[in-house]
Image 1 (cartoon, rainbow, N blue to C red):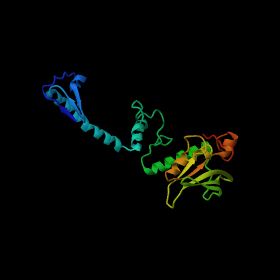
Image 2 (cartoon, rainbow, N blue to C red):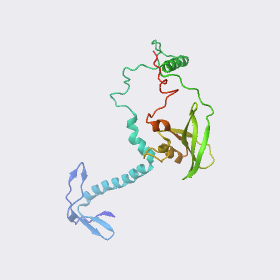
Image 3 (tube, rainbow, N blue to C red):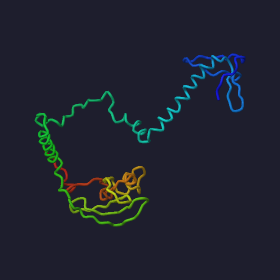
Image 4 (cartoon, one colour):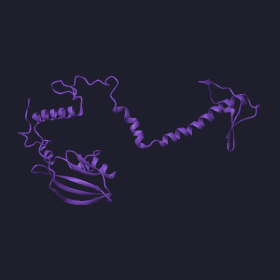
Length: 243
């Protein structure tokens, strides 16, 4: 307990710093069992005790505020500034052409205009890179092995990912009957993403632990032959230069 000792005690000398009386010398502080007794002039100590009371009232509020912030909120507060460009670059898009202009300079003004502009972009892109292969609506899927890991089931599978070409991957399914979101996780090879490869890149594993169904896949052929890429229909015919 904090309290003022009788006026007969020696007067306390105080030092002013930013308007706050600092604590006195050790000779001016007396102790008794279970309490701290402050010596000196009562008027001096009233001001000091008032500052201490304000501090003690504020500390619980600071603690409650810190406890109320979740780890996710703390993380976002720390990284949020990184999601905005520096002020010197804000709103400056350089000399890049706006996608809301046709190649002849005509502006896109309506939703119908954008559909025409979108098709114009796709046509130009496909003329340079080649057209996409047809969508495989019902790919072939084979389950090679099934095992339980922690609180999910891991299926090693082989499936059709390109016309007339199979690849392997891992399908991770959390336990329990439920409608769940699903995520396709792509890496150089499928083991890393399920936690059986390089560290700190187990994206599929972490998502599955949070309730997602994940399909981890990679480019096994590209990794084995060290090209790290896929080409359609072949490496020699994949690139077509347009005008």
